[in-house]
Length: 143
Image (cartoon, rainbow, N blue to C red; front, side, top):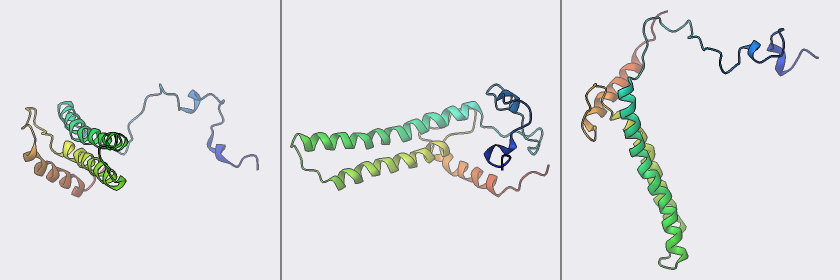
């Protein structure tokens, strides 16, 4: 019974964490299953565009959603308006849902070209959805 339990896979070498390969400074080796010579990464200029668009498209509705709670509280507590809790809930929920949609918009509207696209990036959404679909339909590379 002593050999059974959660710690059965512990190596026979000492109890040192670095000896088991879980040290934070241990380098991570790429999997041998990945295809050599073919790395698919998002270029930094595209990632920066995505991050900016996501921050604006999700941050603004999220701040408005939290602000609707605060504004509703202030209006009700000062006796200015009698706002039903359901209205506050629907308003803030609508803003949070808009923020969730903003996350997708921020990622899909970023231009993948080295030069910056338009301000809103609406013309890039269809192109990026096409790229997304083709990457899903593509069979995995043979190793």
